[in-house]
Length: 291
Ligand code: NAD
Image (cartoon, rainbow, N blue to C red; front, top):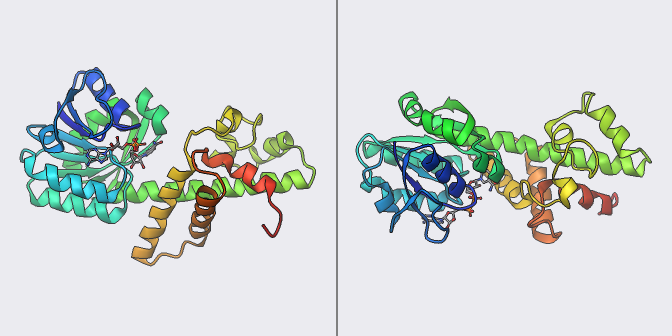
């Protein structure tokens, strides 16, 4: 397929490289990041978008996505697919999809889970929103960049699934970390805590697969000085998107709200920036009941 790829950062770079390596004809654009091997460099987003079957965007946020979409939609061929893989607010995803469809294009929002490791290895999970016909057209590209793609529903459904998943992840990580810190103060051995919880009703992905306690459970960022992994500021971004969405549809999300506040103070006031999101555990270790 002829593919335009806009946003060649930590995630987009390796995703574009994998598409080129699989034999797709990839043209990329990024104002800052270098073009990976095998990808032809365009001078602008519009140039990268012109004449392609699919144009993929992998950008930092919804407002940048809207700006880039305004630039590339007029340049794209009728019937081509605009495939946005960034994590953005549901409203921006829907607005961009509507603009694309009004211009005679197809649109898919397909944020990913799996991080830079998954992008490099081609093992991402895509959660997609958009018409069946559009999903079918880009599915072969999902096969190259990922291991699984779920068609979640209409435009915006991919972003909705992503922020609901990550709201659960943020809340669960905090619960796991505060429980470890409580167990410490109760004199309970961390390994014993893991042995019990990982096989009891408190088990979760954060405990069983990504244990925040160093030296306990499978290898995780905790075993590497809490270097990300999944950075605390990216978790904060996704939690904020969940609260923005909850606000928009009047949903009551008290735990999501609390998790957002905790990650906000962790990242902005307590040195959590640049650390893995599981570094909530050393944060709780240092604290007392009233702060
Ligand atoms: P990044 O900052 O490394 O890459 C974003 C790229 O977009 C940058 O290279 C930047 O120069 C480029 N860009 C900015 N404005 C542009 C424009 N107008 N035209 C073209 N390019 C432009 O970020 P990333 O880590 O690659 O993340 C990309 C998206 O993927 C984000 O929405 C993020 O939330 C999501 N995501 C990231 C991870 C992760 O672990 N890094 C995991 C899942 C999802």
